[in-house]
Figure 1 (cartoon, rainbow, N blue to C red):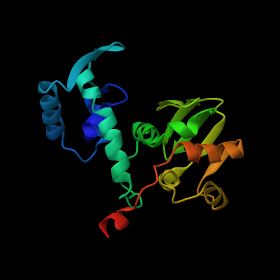
Figure 2: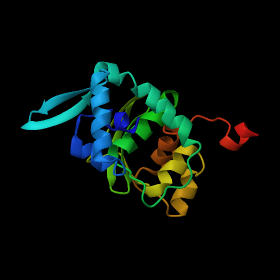
Figure 3: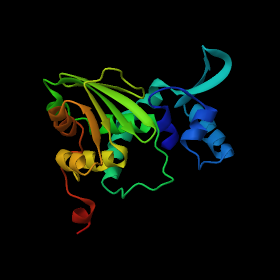
Figure 4: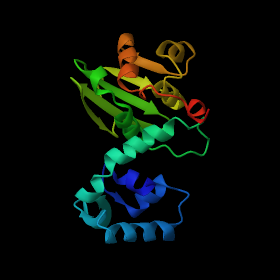
Length: 200
């Protein structure tokens, strides 16, 4: 599923996939990709900018997994603890987190652009009246720039309020302060019982 996740936003070369999944042995990754090709989930394509380079991309059949993986991400996020120092966080992961937590109803009537920094990852999100367009690239002249670091997860989970995030220094912003409150309303996990409540 992690290989599929890393192909959701764009085709990637074998080396790109390895960098995003540093703990997977090369032979295992190669075997998984062959299995996915055989199943019609992944296909190879030549890159236009480098005709000798091969990239892997999801087929339309493979793209059907996107809503399933986003739902699994939301489900699993409730059981996540604090990030570990050796966790790998790439821009694609941040974009998928924003897509998974996007609350369409809260975004109706909102027209705003955000640039989000999490560690070395810089992504952007444009919201236009309930529609989200997010990508793993910076966005010059964004309405709000958010430097969240490890505080992004507790913000999206509702464990950290916008005011507490700013007053503690866990998050720094550049731009309209009230727009940060809107960002946290638009990108959040839906309210539900916590893991301990469900187990009890």
